[in-house]
Picture 1 (cartoon, one colour):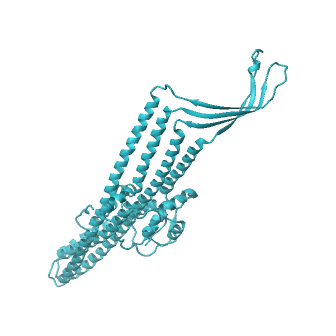
Picture 2 (tube, helix red, strand yellow; picture 1 turned 90 degrees about the vertical axis):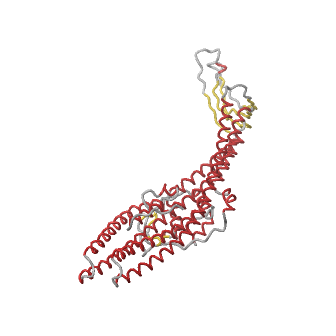
Picture 3 (cartoon, one colour; picture 1 turned 45 degrees about the vertical axis):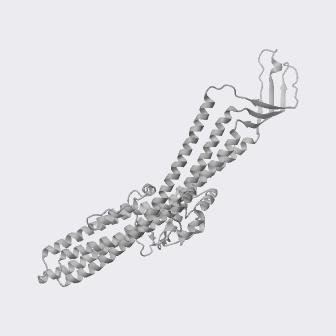
Length: 487
């Protein structure tokens, strides 16, 4: 995990840390562009509203299977005053367009597969011809007005039918895997925004508490100056820090307004809301030795593997252009007029025809071979994409695991640093009352306490976020397994 940037002092250091906290990871950068979103997990704020929009029932069913989020979960989340991470994810699933758009891809794939199967169904049409005889009489016997039913059944057209069904099945599975993969990416985006909310809330609260310490110190300084035990310059130095903290708080609250808008965009929430921080997640029950098997079961890897099959179906179709095509066709004449003379009566009769047609391609330029070469290139490209996806997925798993391990070790170190800074502040405060240290020593102790507390609190949130990223990378929350996040 990358180290936090260290600023000089005050809340500017906290703001820099928070921005780095929210910007970690390429998927989160896409969704959290302004700054981390914030709201303190404090008193309940009524007025939560859900944006919501109509989702096709077929798509809704697909989303339920891919995310494990039910309609009851949505109702429960919309009625809460404090939102947990699971609640935020639930609202994002059904109240933003991301999952619904991905679900529509699966619907389209189903229809494509149906179209592929119907390629073996006879095509029936009604044909009608109205003859207009010319001035010449000798050709009137060949002019006919007629109406007939025409049917054509393709028996095989190269390998189009077989490869089309095979490709349609692969396309359906690809979109199904992509839907589940998108669910994991959405959870990562929501989690990044959620923990960024909490991180800025803690930073704001911490800064306001430090401001209180400075104000109490200023009161004591004024008393000392009045009795001649301190210098006026010490008051001015303290005021400088107080004014700076005040300006930083104003800036942070301004960021809060922008951050709320960003969070609403991710989750689809409207109105006021507050967040509730959950407990510490359990450690994973796997190790890097299991990563090869976990990588093979990732949804993006499965989708890339299925795309190779899709490309093979395309190559089969291209080779099929060299093969003969066969079809069965027939017609049934419902009505026919054969005009012999201008005075003769029309002859009406019914008749039918049935024929078997076979076509063998002999010469068609280089088009057929070019299609084969193109299909081969597509298949090779799919193989390369699969190889790259497997490698990237394995790297993501390993990085997520190392980040989680590093966050755990860092949290323990930050906790010790915070305990030491708190003890140092208490000691310096007592010594300052005894006039054993200067105001500069006291201000230094206050800044150290602020920094250490912030480091410790943000490290705790970082550990939770890194653990969730690892869980998403390992498919721990896929489908019905999302119930583990509720706990």
